Length: 86
Image 1 (spheres, rainbow, N blue to C red):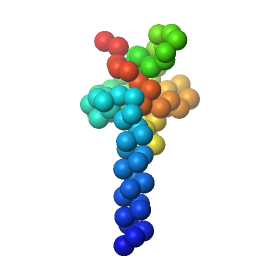
Image 2 (cartoon, one colour; image 1 turned 120 degrees about the horizontal axis):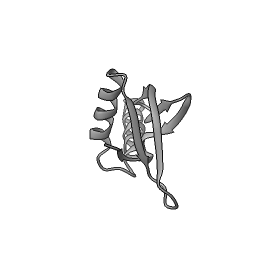
Image 3 (tube, helix red, strand yellow; image 1 turned 45 degrees about the vertical axis):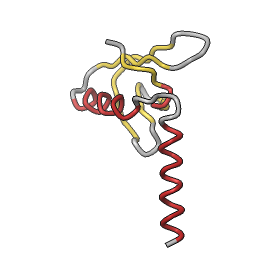
Image 4 (cartoon, one colour; image 1 turned 90 degrees about the vertical axis):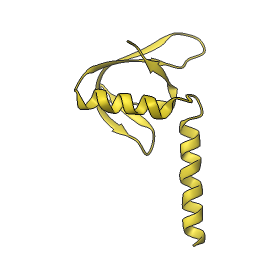
């Protein structure tokens, strides 16, 4: 029973780490999943304190457990995504 409690706590910790930068993480993830299912190009605005970063490409894979997305062969943290450019 202690193992299960520890596992839940670890999962909760990962979840809170993922959402640290973006309070709209769940909504953003749903939009990204929808765009992936449509095989659409995506333009993401990334959080950076020094410059306006944008990530443009096709979504190849999404790992919801680690909170990462693969575009053009590279993995990016979803918690660093500010929003989807429209």
